[in-house]
Image (cartoon, rainbow, N blue to C red; front, top):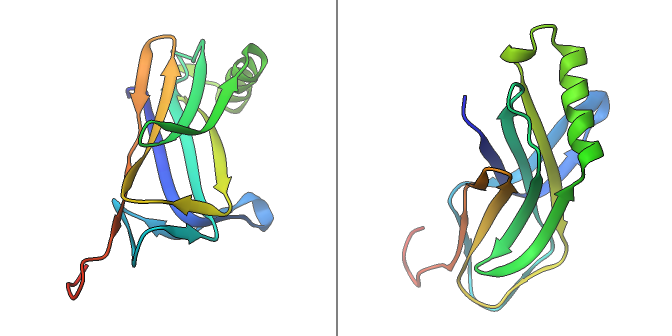
Length: 146
């Protein structure tokens, strides 16, 4: 397995009983709006940076961008990175078969969009940048099916 980012763009993230997380109104590649500018009541991004346990992150910063504008940044410190490794070792006797995941749930409420854009997710590590899935925000075509 290689390092990668898992990304989910959705209308809401709900923490349920029993430790479950529900993603409501999940977008695939596009978010279509009737017109610009538009204000969404809420837009959420669930981000996980995943790495083999045998190759833990030494440095990790997660970012959500609207085109080139920084919307969110989470910098994981040495303690957080070490705790992730320790919990994986505690849960798995075979450390080399496990993976480590560090992430964030980003809630932007309200979320204003002035025009067409691309929401991007990036992770900066000691080995360089990882790229997550993007969400393209565009206006519905008049009279056309989307």
